[in-house]
Figure 1 (cartoon, rainbow, N blue to C red):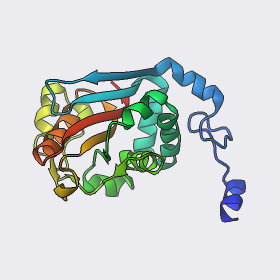
Figure 2: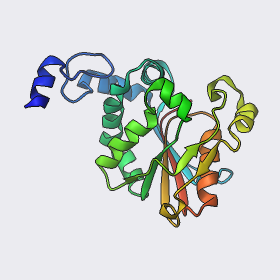
Figure 3: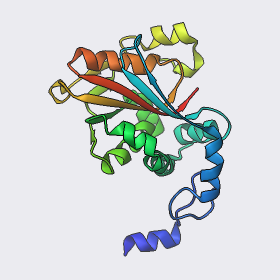
Length: 213
């Protein structure tokens, strides 16, 4: 009954055009997003992670919505992004390879300022609707670094170095781990996370992001 009343007062809208839409993503916007969809899967030999998958190219509408989600207090957009991910058959096939999903963490100070970790909200939805187990207390960001977006490739690698530690490592030994993040640019953040997880016994590490810059 409470959900029904809330839906009447605050009806669900499409996360991209804000029109009332029970699914959180209207058909018109779903078609618009096809323009940016790449569904890129890549194997990696020079990174600590084994493979990566990126759903969209990071530009125009996708860029605008991810920025809005992260920085403009629009946590509700996690439902729209989750729907996009879980409706994608290629992504669902990719998810089946893994045992655990770990959202790339943000520093506790940054989370306090923002009010939420944008990757964690989506990872939780993915875990709730798939076989994956969500683990958000294994990978910890111990350094509140300069935002990676303001740096070049070599600066990013130095900036992110030793930023993460692993706890509760018994949960990841011999497990296939999927790291989830919003944007992939140079891979420095994902690589540093994977390095920590592999060192602590993870069998395999893959990366899934909403977009690739």
